[in-house]
Image 1: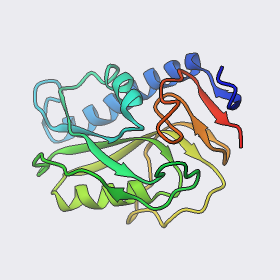
Image 2: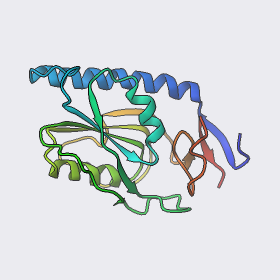
Image 3: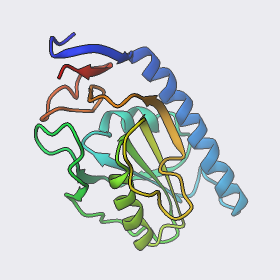
Image 4: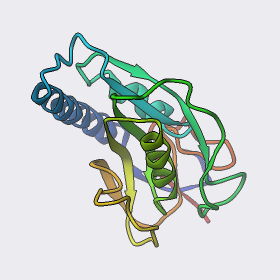
Length: 191
């Protein structure tokens, strides 16, 4: 373990187990939604996964291996913790979406739900791009933090891996000043 870590919060084994469960849940959710529309989710590319880079890259790579649907990936970079910040500084788009999302069912994949600003920003963008439906999956849902109001009648994230306390965490794609993304567990950074 890195000496800068106070403790391991979630082990790599628990992460792997929960990510597999989430993939199955998400696959079933989208298959049911598409079946109701008369769409075969295994043959038509109606599902687009939009991971929030760079924090969600490892989570997304593991998650999509457990979603048995034909899908596309469209990467989106958003910054909310610049440099050595340990509190969200507000979400800002760092890249553009190139795909036409008209009529597509979109799943946003993010590493952590904190203030809600990132998911709110991305949901608004996808809505403007004509997505038929927008859902979100987050690995971590930080409890006890102030959040912006959720989008109109929606939850911030329909699929949640783990609820965690209000602590600054790193590992499994989450970073501090660009470091610790390679840690296979999720740990609390020593303050």
